[in-house]
Length: 179
Image (cartoon, rainbow, N blue to C red; front, top):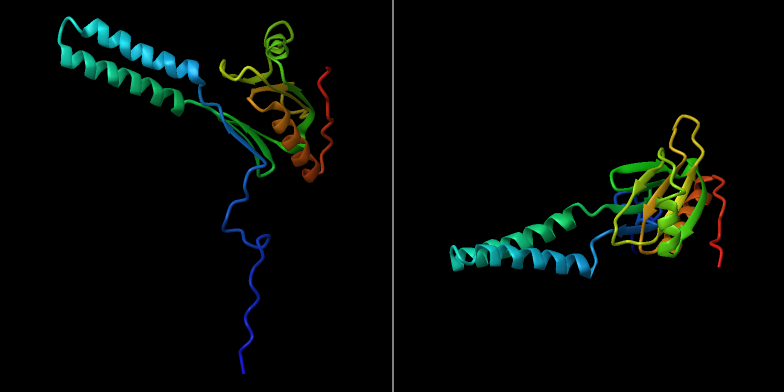
Protein backbone atom coordinates (compact mmCIF):
# COMPACT_ATOMS: atom_id res chain seq x y z
CA UNK A 1 0.00 0.00 0.00
CA UNK A 2 1.40 3.37 -0.95
CA UNK A 3 0.93 6.60 0.92
CA UNK A 4 -0.70 9.49 -0.94
CA UNK A 5 1.61 12.25 -2.07
CA UNK A 6 1.00 15.81 -0.98
CA UNK A 7 -0.15 18.06 -3.81
CA UNK A 8 2.72 19.66 -5.72
CA UNK A 9 2.60 23.42 -6.24
CA UNK A 10 1.94 24.56 -9.76
CA UNK A 11 4.19 27.17 -11.39
CA UNK A 12 1.46 29.77 -10.80
CA UNK A 13 1.45 28.98 -7.07
CA UNK A 14 5.23 29.20 -6.74
CA UNK A 15 6.21 32.71 -5.67
CA UNK A 16 9.84 31.87 -4.88
CA UNK A 17 10.85 32.20 -8.54
CA UNK A 18 10.36 35.58 -10.19
CA UNK A 19 8.30 35.70 -13.35
CA UNK A 20 10.28 36.32 -16.51
CA UNK A 21 9.84 39.85 -17.83
CA UNK A 22 7.56 40.35 -20.83
CA UNK A 23 10.33 42.43 -22.40
CA UNK A 24 13.91 43.08 -21.39
CA UNK A 25 16.71 44.81 -23.25
CA UNK A 26 20.00 46.19 -22.05
CA UNK A 27 21.03 49.07 -24.30
CA UNK A 28 24.68 48.12 -24.67
CA UNK A 29 26.71 49.95 -27.28
CA UNK A 30 27.06 48.66 -30.80
CA UNK A 31 30.21 47.77 -32.76
CA UNK A 32 31.11 51.42 -33.44
CA UNK A 33 31.40 52.14 -29.71
CA UNK A 34 33.53 49.04 -29.19
CA UNK A 35 35.84 50.23 -31.98
CA UNK A 36 35.89 53.69 -30.39
CA UNK A 37 36.96 52.21 -27.06
CA UNK A 38 39.73 50.24 -28.78
CA UNK A 39 40.73 53.41 -30.64
CA UNK A 40 40.96 55.29 -27.37
CA UNK A 41 43.29 52.60 -26.05
CA UNK A 42 45.47 52.93 -29.15
CA UNK A 43 45.59 56.73 -28.80
CA UNK A 44 46.62 56.46 -25.14
CA UNK A 45 49.26 53.87 -26.04
CA UNK A 46 50.70 55.93 -28.91
CA UNK A 47 50.74 59.06 -26.77
CA UNK A 48 52.73 57.35 -24.02
CA UNK A 49 55.00 55.31 -26.34
CA UNK A 50 57.90 57.82 -26.36
CA UNK A 51 57.99 57.79 -22.55
CA UNK A 52 57.96 54.04 -21.85
CA UNK A 53 57.04 51.24 -24.22
CA UNK A 54 55.73 48.75 -21.65
CA UNK A 55 53.80 51.41 -19.76
CA UNK A 56 52.30 52.70 -23.01
CA UNK A 57 50.96 49.26 -23.88
CA UNK A 58 49.63 48.70 -20.35
CA UNK A 59 47.95 52.11 -20.07
CA UNK A 60 46.45 51.76 -23.55
CA UNK A 61 44.99 48.38 -22.64
CA UNK A 62 43.67 49.72 -19.32
CA UNK A 63 42.07 52.72 -21.08
CA UNK A 64 40.31 50.48 -23.61
CA UNK A 65 39.08 47.99 -21.01
CA UNK A 66 37.97 50.74 -18.60
CA UNK A 67 36.01 52.44 -21.38
CA UNK A 68 34.29 49.19 -22.33
CA UNK A 69 33.45 48.43 -18.70
CA UNK A 70 32.06 51.95 -18.22
CA UNK A 71 29.91 51.65 -21.35
CA UNK A 72 28.46 48.33 -20.20
CA UNK A 73 27.97 49.45 -16.59
CA UNK A 74 26.08 52.59 -17.61
CA UNK A 75 23.90 50.88 -20.23
CA UNK A 76 20.29 51.27 -19.11
CA UNK A 77 17.85 48.37 -18.97
CA UNK A 78 14.43 48.69 -20.60
CA UNK A 79 12.04 46.18 -19.06
CA UNK A 80 8.34 45.39 -18.81
CA UNK A 81 7.68 43.26 -15.73
CA UNK A 82 5.76 43.20 -12.47
CA UNK A 83 3.13 45.59 -13.80
CA UNK A 84 5.60 48.36 -14.65
CA UNK A 85 7.77 49.78 -17.39
CA UNK A 86 11.34 50.41 -16.32
CA UNK A 87 13.71 52.50 -18.42
CA UNK A 88 17.04 53.14 -16.77
CA UNK A 89 16.41 54.12 -13.15
CA UNK A 90 12.85 55.34 -13.76
CA UNK A 91 9.75 53.19 -13.33
CA UNK A 92 6.11 53.77 -14.21
CA UNK A 93 3.11 51.48 -13.52
CA UNK A 94 1.46 50.06 -16.62
CA UNK A 95 -1.99 51.20 -15.49
CA UNK A 96 -1.10 54.89 -16.10
CA UNK A 97 0.03 54.28 -19.68
CA UNK A 98 -2.07 55.42 -22.59
CA UNK A 99 -1.03 55.40 -26.27
CA UNK A 100 2.04 53.41 -27.27
CA UNK A 101 3.70 54.53 -30.50
CA UNK A 102 6.59 52.45 -31.85
CA UNK A 103 9.13 54.42 -33.88
CA UNK A 104 10.75 51.87 -36.17
CA UNK A 105 12.82 54.30 -38.20
CA UNK A 106 15.64 56.61 -37.12
CA UNK A 107 13.86 59.51 -38.86
CA UNK A 108 10.79 59.10 -36.62
CA UNK A 109 13.00 59.02 -33.53
CA UNK A 110 14.92 62.13 -34.64
CA UNK A 111 11.66 64.01 -35.13
CA UNK A 112 10.39 62.91 -31.71
CA UNK A 113 13.67 64.01 -30.11
CA UNK A 114 13.90 67.26 -32.04
CA UNK A 115 11.03 69.50 -33.10
CA UNK A 116 8.30 67.36 -31.55
CA UNK A 117 9.94 66.95 -28.11
CA UNK A 118 8.06 68.25 -25.07
CA UNK A 119 10.57 69.49 -22.48
CA UNK A 120 8.58 67.78 -19.71
CA UNK A 121 8.94 64.31 -21.27
CA UNK A 122 11.07 61.62 -19.71
CA UNK A 123 13.72 60.51 -22.19
CA UNK A 124 15.84 57.37 -21.88
CA UNK A 125 18.08 57.73 -24.91
CA UNK A 126 21.15 55.98 -26.20
CA UNK A 127 22.56 57.20 -29.51
CA UNK A 128 23.41 53.68 -30.65
CA UNK A 129 19.77 52.56 -30.37
CA UNK A 130 18.28 54.69 -33.13
CA UNK A 131 14.67 53.51 -32.76
CA UNK A 132 12.27 53.57 -29.83
CA UNK A 133 8.78 53.98 -28.45
CA UNK A 134 6.76 56.91 -27.22
CA UNK A 135 4.41 56.05 -24.36
CA UNK A 136 1.75 58.59 -23.36
CA UNK A 137 0.86 58.86 -19.66
CA UNK A 138 -2.52 59.67 -18.11
CA UNK A 139 -1.54 60.34 -14.51
CA UNK A 140 -3.06 63.63 -13.29
CA UNK A 141 -0.46 63.86 -10.50
CA UNK A 142 2.51 63.55 -12.85
CA UNK A 143 3.41 66.48 -15.12
CA UNK A 144 5.31 64.15 -17.48
CA UNK A 145 3.20 63.90 -20.66
CA UNK A 146 5.04 60.90 -22.13
CA UNK A 147 8.13 58.73 -22.05
CA UNK A 148 10.44 58.46 -25.02
CA UNK A 149 12.52 55.29 -24.71
CA UNK A 150 15.29 54.04 -26.99
CA UNK A 151 15.14 50.38 -27.98
CA UNK A 152 16.43 48.29 -30.83
CA UNK A 153 13.14 46.32 -30.80
CA UNK A 154 10.32 48.92 -30.78
CA UNK A 155 7.57 46.60 -32.05
CA UNK A 156 8.33 44.00 -29.35
CA UNK A 157 8.38 46.62 -26.58
CA UNK A 158 5.10 48.14 -27.79
CA UNK A 159 3.49 44.68 -27.89
CA UNK A 160 4.74 43.84 -24.39
CA UNK A 161 3.37 47.15 -23.07
CA UNK A 162 -0.02 46.49 -24.65
CA UNK A 163 -0.16 42.94 -23.26
CA UNK A 164 0.90 44.13 -19.81
CA UNK A 165 -1.64 46.94 -19.84
CA UNK A 166 -4.42 44.56 -20.89
CA UNK A 167 -3.49 42.23 -18.02
CA UNK A 168 -3.44 45.19 -15.61
CA UNK A 169 -6.93 46.14 -16.76
CA UNK A 170 -5.89 49.42 -18.34
CA UNK A 171 -6.75 51.04 -21.61
CA UNK A 172 -3.59 51.25 -23.66
CA UNK A 173 -4.45 52.32 -27.16
CA UNK A 174 -2.42 50.80 -29.93
CA UNK A 175 -1.00 53.24 -32.41
CA UNK A 176 0.35 51.61 -35.51
CA UNK A 177 3.15 53.37 -37.34
CA UNK A 178 2.25 54.85 -40.69
CA UNK A 179 3.86 53.09 -43.62
